[in-house]
Image 1 (cartoon, chains in turn brown, orange):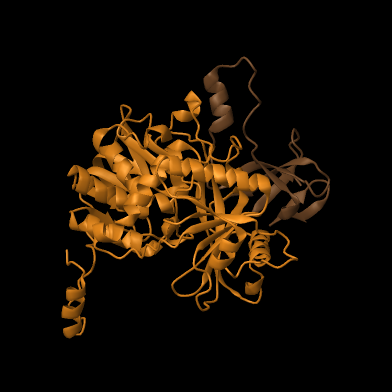
Image 2 (cartoon, one colour):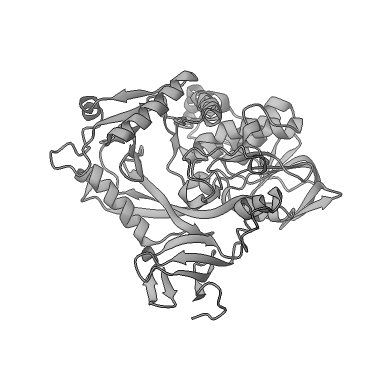
Length: 88
Length: 418
């Protein structure tokens, strides 16, 4: 699997560390209700299909990036830096 | 049910083996059942069997989208063990191991359970201490565990790297003698045959595409073979647990990940235990056909693909030749992957859900095979009585909200790390 890093271009996925679901958030306030924290920490949509997820380019530029990847086909449709909408 | 025995074998041999009957029926779905079990793998079939046998509930259907045992039951590395450190896990898996010990007789079907022992090599002092602690914990609840010194390990598994230049010198090993391996397909087939004999309808090529919930209560399923009404629904679908739960508007503390496994070409018997490498994530055993079946860690990202990437295969192969350099010339014959429903604490979920009459048996991470009989037994109990058995009460869905997670590895809510 090649992951398109916005800084480094296509790089083998073994250079990256997986960071999980990127659609969660924002992080709840510290005083938020227990159930809000429970959902944030534990519950996931876990879709079979398109998935927005964090990857850390550990053996590259060390950036956290957001990758759009299909969990059924492993096809990657784009990536971006967190907080931006642009995809490469 | 035609009982299998040496006499039936002899009788059929005289008749040129022309008289064998199919081991189970292929019925069309009825409009209504008392209980529908979704998923025709080991856990689903075991659940149906114990529902019929232990609780007298025989108006049961097992719905399978593909063929029996075609998911993780047919894709695992067949280890059966109960070497856990947390007491809730110990008690449950030890119960399951005891069921394994009489399973072939119980089902009148040879599941080829071979108690050859599961051996974990030790390479460092802190690891040795941790394994000793784990073994002592197991002995406290009445399970079996022994610690071997290097000479004993060498006598038991001479093929390991005991050379002076070994990258990870072996300082001992942790052995559970009663643990072992079983024939995975036979487990599914044995439970299917026994459940069918009790009157359970096993319906293959029947995918559930919706769960009907009325007034907070599950009342039926929509399938590719029509709608079926039911009193209760039990979900036992391994990697797809989140998808089935979503049909009833439930979100679960689960991520689906992929785990790869592979076999080498067959060779003469050389490995007489099921081996886990203590200095890396690698485990292997030798099948009755002579292949070394081996596996390692998850690929580490969400996936429903049932196929993985090459870096993990390389990693597993590297660990294999590190601990057993003598297999360096063997070729990998096949490799495959399965979908693991990894929970947030690495332990399964077996119990009730917020939807009445809907029960979940899932989140087995990559340890589901060994649990097959125990899982089916407690899940049948949970469905029949609408409350969990003492053995699976700790494995409830509510434990995440109440804070009673069962985190064997102690890594927190990171599914890929369990």
